[in-house]
Image (cartoon, rainbow, N blue to C red; front, side, top):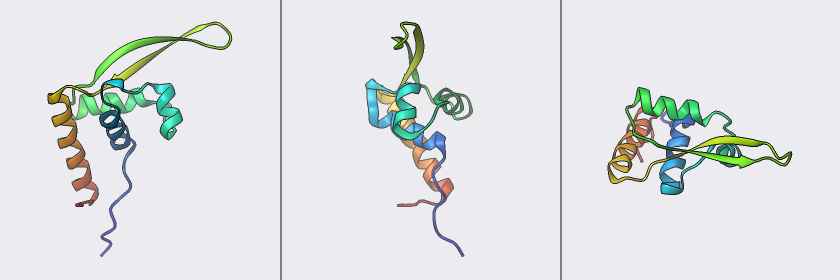
Length: 101
């Protein structure tokens, strides 16, 4: 019997990052730098739609080096109800992948 926990999913990594960043949150550009994800929006969608998690969103604009503007969405989890639900979901993910620590 193999009792080694499975690797964390990208959705779980995104959720952990959202919890750790609090109100500061994270956007696509930062997610790529932190853990190589270019599609944080897809994982936020999964967390929101499949797992019914409330995630705050704020649109931001940045000016690129060429002077053109680009938009990013900053995602965050910071209200007490969001934090409670997110921690419960993380516990569910850990149990599902066999990490009972």
